[in-house]
Length: 91
Image (cartoon, rainbow, N blue to C red; front, side):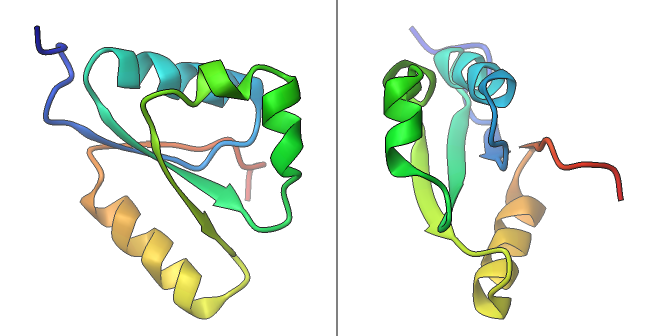
């Protein structure tokens, strides 16, 4: 059975549990979620805190927001996404 969000693309730029869980639910309901991991993030942190569950069904890429080429890739992915989930501070 196809999920109700089948055909929608989601870009996940979040770092916390709330964003991971929100995009997990979008993926569970058929959304094609791509998670952008930061180069400076601790790869073991997600595993210790449930990352194996929260990031299931998601594609992922490691990109650096400070690198011009990587930032252009992120912008391209955001422009193509139907849904963008982020948790940046205002401004």
